[in-house]
Every structure is written in C-alpha cells, then in structure tokens.
Image (cartoon, rainbow, N blue to C red; front, side, top):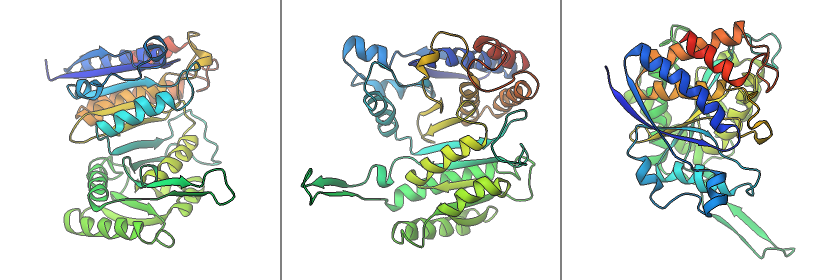
Length: 360
C-alpha cells in the first residue's frame, strides 16, 4: 500500500452531504486502483451546528484542520441562517487562517455538456485561472464616514504587497509548467497570461506586471508570457476561449472571470475549485452552493463535487488518480446523463456517483 492521506471532510449544508458522498465513492475507487489510502474524518461545521449551538467555528478549528493533508468541502449556506454569517465565519475565516492564498479554477468543457458559446466544443474551452486569494480590494483598507448624510464617503482600497504578488505568480508559473497545454500534450507551448488593468490601475498592476516579467524571465524562461486587460479577457472568454492556457490575476478580477468561465463550461453544476496553500492545507469544493431546495431528493448533480475531489488528488500529487476520475466524468457526461440540471440528468445523484466510481 502506498501513501496514506489524512482528509478532513466538511459536508456542510443543503445538498453538500449528498454530493460529498458521491465524491467519496470516486475517491475511494481511485485510491484502490492507484494504491494509496485516504483516511476521511468528518466535521459538522455548517448551518445545523450553528443553529444548534450558536457557534460558527470553534476557536481551535484552524489548528485542528492543519493536522490534515487536505480539506474536502461540500457546501456552506443554510436557509435558516442570514446570508454572510456562515460564508464569512467558515469559508473566509478558514481561507485566511490557513493562508489559502491561491484560488484555482479549471475551465474545461466536458464532452456532452452544453455551452452557451456557439460553435465551441471541449477542444476550445480548456484552460485554468489562478486567482490571488488573500489580498486586493476585498481585504484592503477602507471605511465609511458621515454615513447616512448627503456627504457620506465610502473608501475601499486595492492593496497588494510584493510578497503577496510574487508568491501568487510563482505558483502560477509552476502550475503552468506542470499542467499547461504543452505539458498535457495539447499545444506547442505552456503559456501564462497576466490579467490586469495596467492602463487605469497604474500603481497596483505596475507592481504585478513588473514582478510577472522579472520572475518569468529569470526563473521560468520555458513558460511563454502574455498580458491581457481584464475587459478584453472577458470578451476573449466568449469569442475565442481557445486562446487561453493559464491565466493569473488579482482577487477581484479573478472572482469575476472565473464565474464567467464556469458558465461557458456548462454552469456551476460542473465547476470545481480549490483554495490552495502550497505549503500547507488546501480546501477543495464544488462552486454551485448548497441548493437547499433539492436537499434529500437525490436529484442534485454531484459532478462538480467529484471533480473537486479530483483536484484535491492532483494537488496532493496523485496525478494519475486525478486523471482517472476526470476521464470517468467525461465518459459519464458524454454517454450517460442527459443534462447537468437537478432532476433532469436521467439518473439519481447516487446513480451518477456509482457510474463515475465504476468507470474509475
């Protein structure tokens, strides 16, 4: 038996536990096939715990989770809890306390999945976005003065330091070298493109652009470098997504373009993401949310959760196992399910999970 990985599982709210259960099936099948072991430990963080105890997260939650190799998350969001309480108290708190400074979002259209982009297929939509996850305008300085008066002033600043920028760029260069199109046998070059707004945000993106070229020229001469304005990027994502390989960008821009990318790959039902600390504990999750209206009906699409499990294995270094899960998902989307929409797949949640696990 190969290596044993300790995985913290947070099934969470709504349909989160259902999709996580299907993800476990695929993960266990991959572990058995590729000779490693997963020890899964569940944590009840989420809305039910909060309503029962009044506690969002225990004070030692981050320390407890640091003992694990990775975190596998279902969904956070409960209809009985005011929006923002759980999201900030669990997701954002863990991202910051565990210093998960990278958000990684693959944008891949799988066979059989519909895209709103006319004339585009899986060969055109196949790239990844590396988003800086701990700085920028979301976490910068700001405040409100004279609130409620005609002279009210609101300020929120985009703040980055060289350390934050450089560690994000280095991760992006490393990822491109390892998983870019050339590395995957799908192109002639591995290309990393910086997405910014150098013509308007002249201070922040001067820092990003200088660091991007300095690091690339000195340490990653084998990776081709490009630059795109963020507004042009949005247009290219719709018109010519085949131009992209790996994109790297700031927190806010990354938040916006990854949701656009998810829609082009078929919607939130297939989009997976990772909040990554390359030197610590990373957390992987489906992007679609808890979908509470479908809870317990066994009709929710589990593929995004299954894909996030594959991302987890890839990040842990079990690349062949991750690819096996991804290929199994492709087979199911191409040949089995009718739609990604809840209740319209032609199969139940558990049946889809079984099919993926069998194909692994």
